[in-house]
Length: 263
Image (cartoon, rainbow, N blue to C red; front, side):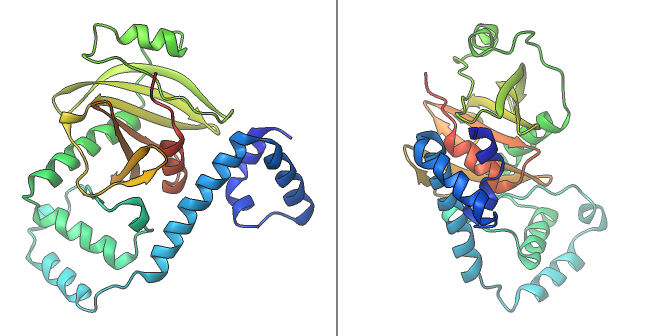
């Protein structure tokens, strides 16, 4: 059995949804594979925290009335404006948005938020998501890590070290120079299980997500979202690594937490 097969069915494996024979076969592979053991444990931690928080989340009884009043007071043109939601909640408190909570975030975005940290975060996340969704072509003909690092020399004011993943179904497929807010940034394009993932690297002074991070191993992980895309974020060595892509939030969080971005 190959590692990519285990990783492709990680959710079903951790949730015990595989048939008994397949489950036993997967467990035998995991017992002999340190990389898969680490990924399975990380997946279990993330799923446990998300589910535990979901079971204890309580929606205030006054929320519906506050949402209704805020929508009535907001100008019509603002109610139609694109919404960017910021979730400065650490991973241990991050849960799937219930309808009422999502509505509240939309109202906050519609009537305007003046907090500088939230505005900065929104702008940063919007730039990252825009870069991914625009599907711009790569500027690097040979998307090999050393070639990519060499390409960015002199183009950005920091060394670019492409994120590396142990999983066999993740591969670097391109890169290009871009911008996040007023900062030059490096956009790194990947394919993971056949889906597009973009990792944007830029100086941390360009923006950070407010709120306390959650600790995974030696890494702090933040979380935000924009235009329906999840954006896990890591800060390391003065640089921000923002991950987004055509994957669900849980998968992106696991990918961001397991990425190696050091030399």
